[in-house]
Length: 388
Ligand SMILES: [Zn+2]
Image 1 (cartoon, helix red, strand yellow):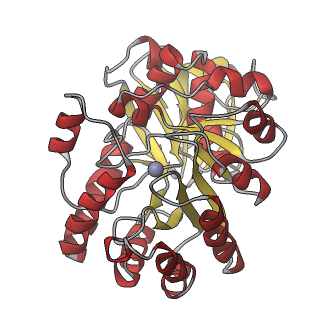
Image 2 (tube, helix red, strand yellow):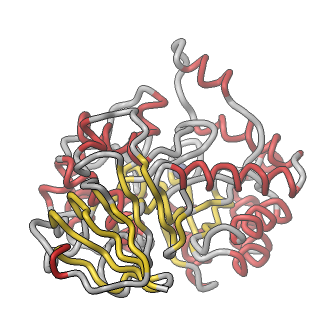
């Protein structure tokens, strides 16, 4: 069955060959979907015939969001911690251990139900690809089950046994690194595509992070790094050196860090929900873009430091606070996320791409920043299936 979506007021293809600017923008456009893929995109007046049609009524169509950084396998709630922080307490990496205790105590069914709910919540807001990390189990069995559960929802699963040092190893961090690079990695690697580490004071230093990422690479995983979130540090340089797909957060960058990102294929993934929810200074997207780095926007959805699944919210904050234009922010939330996951089949509306489409209740993608906080999802197709 083929589907013609026509009367699209504004179409973001993310292919400069199909339309104007980096977004490959077309007006009065149409898209044809064959099965799970896009087969054609162009001016409505030139659209080929299809079995069925959908009238977009002049609204904007863009690629489904690609959220390349999320922590969704967890149990419990940290409302009290957020409330305390908004009353003046500082954010530290140690809060993660609260969620670890709740996650270990939860059943597989509870964790799966939570994850299903969050993936669905994201889908309703236009996110059609989502990455999911472990990191709230911190034992061999709990990390492996987190990834097993995540793999039922997304191929983009990330082994983050090195989120923080497990409480049992508080006096023996080297022993925990041995576990993460040994028995835990053995149990997790079959369920994971990526390996990640929180390289930060209070979590893992540069040498530990290098050992963890190198061990993951040796097991066939590709690295991505929580880098330079709370302070300056070695994370970004390590990510670039090891060929990581992405360095995530990038809030505290030296000129050398920016230059390293700009001259590499490592994507700078910015997570403004974290700065918003911790009242921290935002990363400088303008500086990265002007230097020539590839930028992605993601939610970092997690119960501690960024409990939002809204890519639209991240776009609005990035435009208001991080020096991005609306076009740049939308590109970063779609194609940028795809690049951070090294995916060429999502983040674009081009022939051959997966038919992941977000129809907005608005005439332009700019409304994602122009109308912050307003639910603008009119319809969502994932792999050609109308889901929302
Ligand atoms: Zn994170």
